[in-house]
Each structure stands twice: as structure tokens, then as C-alpha cells.
Length: 504
Image (cartoon, rainbow, N blue to C red; front, top):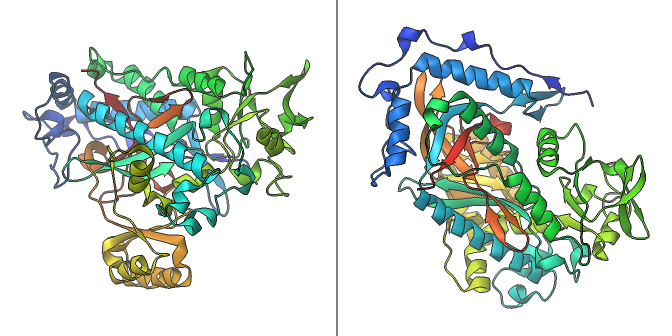
């Protein structure tokens, strides 16, 4: 594979408007903002705003459009120079791109964050109890809460984990929960990311960029900090190290430079102060894992792995994997090393399993879900398939094993030819798909070529679980930069915003 090609951000002059083009009225920057028929994160809230949020709106309104463009272009140039990129692969080349950064932050009140925080923690508890159960007693299957076939025949179900204890019964140490907001302002879970969730590096770097380039906006604001994530992540990985290890050696295990999230691997290893390793840097002897160093072999106790299960160990999974470490899985099964996240967690973020999460929360915790889920039709079930086929033009249809916005169909935006082609896929392999209603995602003011316009956003909070669960205040706010688009994924042209959580 060729080395990724760097794609520079557009020069500032390409999209900047003349200084005189800035909107001038009592509304200032937002004079031409068309308040949309969606819940707007900043402009058309109906609840009583805390003074801090009103201050953000007032300060933003005073900005000149041309000046905001200048600062945005400066931010993107700095992100590029710092190497804060992700890789997009095509058939012919690999291109390193910056994640487009919008300087207008997404703001959450203290009460909103408290609701999200409790809801994410509840969901993570249920996910860990579910994973512990399906790899041990399987009460949930015997009690008929979720179909056994959906779990045991799931491609992400890992037979090697059956009966294997893990420290603290924690399987999902790092979790990313994708949240959306509907027209009423209600937060809903769109999906779980329980394998190797990515994007937290942008949360931290976005904050750095905002404080550096928008000090006049952030000054004096009671913002919750995001700076402790690296320390918290390292603490979590130490807490779940094998029993009896007093000073655990933590490493971040990366597939290497050609991975699309390699920047994040480097970033998080640096934030934690731990070695960044690849498969060739690790060796297993006598069922224990060691790291090769210039001073000889050094024991490794806790591995934050950013590889999918199938590439971790050629002896246990894919024999052709050149990325993994022979013998790693057996060392893990014997309790001599911790993998975060655990093997087999992918079954918990399967899009069909997602449909049962409200039941699983009630089953394991005896509580109603704090965060609602989106109604989901399972096409593997006769009723779900029939409903989906009859309403394709009104639904979002997703393959259960894909991520990043790949392979989905938004029926209301599809041509008849696309609908017909997708219908054939559904009929050929219905078990590979689920469908959901189109949710009118909330919008946030976003700097666009023609001015400040409404663009759809979502939110990915990140939770860490060791002895306890902690949720990073805020998370990654992704924004669909194309007008009318509901797809916020970076791989599909989305960007990001700094997420401000008000302390009061």
C-alpha cells in the first residue's frame, strides 16, 4: 500500500468573504441565520437559559463573519501542521485529511450534561453485565430476553471468551455512545461503540484550538475541562491489570501508521505517558506478554488495543494476520494480561442487539432506561423485514456490522433505482440489516461557504470503566457539513465542533 498522501486544507482566500459581507444587525453574526424547523442547540431553545449560555450567544453575535472565517482557516492550518489527521482510503490512494473543525461550539447546560452522564453510565453498566452473562451463565438467553441465535450466531461473539474471567467483570473499558437529539430536544441513543471507539483525541484538540483562537469567546466561561482524559484512561487501565501487579506496565497496541486513526493512537499514548507498540514490539513467552526494549524484555500487564479481534493473534484468529502477536489470546485467557476492550465485545454494539438494550437495562438493573433508544426493526425477523420492505422510502436501513456511515440507505433521499437495488440486498440477506425511522437530528449554527447556517449534529460521549465509570464531560460533536445531510461521520465528509459543558 502506498504511503498516505497529505491533502492540505483549502487556503484562507478560497472561501473567505470580504469584510463588508459580514452581517450587520442587532443579531450580528446570526442576522441571516434561518432558524430551522428542528431543535437548534443554540438559537431557538424554549427553556430558560442559564446566564452563561446567553453570554455565549451574545458574544458570538458580535463576531464579524470575515474574522470568523479567518480564525477557522487558521485553525485548520494549525491542525494540518500538527498532523491531526485521519486517513481516507480509496481504491487508488490513501489521503490524510484534517477533520474539518467548526469554530462555533456546541453548548450543553449543566442539567443536560447531568442527564447524559447518568444515562451513559447506566448503559455501560448494562453492557458489561450483558457481556459477562453471555460468556458465562447465559441467564438472559434462557429467560428469553433476547433471542439466543442473535447472540450465539453473531459474527462478533467470541467462543474463546466462554468461561474466561476478566478483572472486575469489566469487558467494555472504553465506550463511545452515539447520541442524537430529536425535534423536542430529547436525547436518544443511536448506537453503541464497545470495541475500539475513536474520536476522543479530537475532543481534546478541539478544546485546545478553541481556547487558543477564540479566547474572547471562552474567557470567563464556566467550562468543564476535558484535560484529564489521558490521566483517567491510564488509571482505568491500571485498575484492570491482572491481580497482584503493583505497578502495571500499560501499552497502547496500534496496527501501525496506515491505520486511519493512527494520529489518535500516537496522541493517546503520549497523553498517558505509555509506549506505543505494534505487533513486532511484543512477544509471548510462557504465556506472558513482554515488550522488546533496548534493555531487554519488559513485562506488559495491560494493553489498550486498537486492533479488531481477528487481527490480534494469528494462532487464535486470522492466521494471515501480520499485525498480531502469536500467543496473546492464550496469555489473556490465563489472566496474565488484560486487553481493553475485552475480546468479544463487538456483540454488544451489534445494531440488531441494540434493539434489545431497553429490555437488557430493565433485566439487569431493574431500571427504566434514562436515555431512550430509536425504534429499530430487525430484518432477520419476518415482521421487521415486511415493515422495512413496505416503508423503505421512509426509513434508514443499515447493515448490522458496518460503521462509519458506510453501506446505509436513507430512503427519503434515495432514488428509485437505489431503493430497488437495496430491496434486492434486503431480500438476499435480511439478517444483515436493521431499519430505523428517520430522526430529525438537532442542528447547530455552523460556518458554511455562504455564511452561518444550520447543520445537523450528533454527540459521542466517551466513558471509561475500571473500578467505577467516568464520562468525559462533553464528547465529540460531529456535524454534517453538507446541507440537508444527516450523515455526520468523518469518513463521509462530516466535521466536528468543540463541545462545551457548562459547570453551572
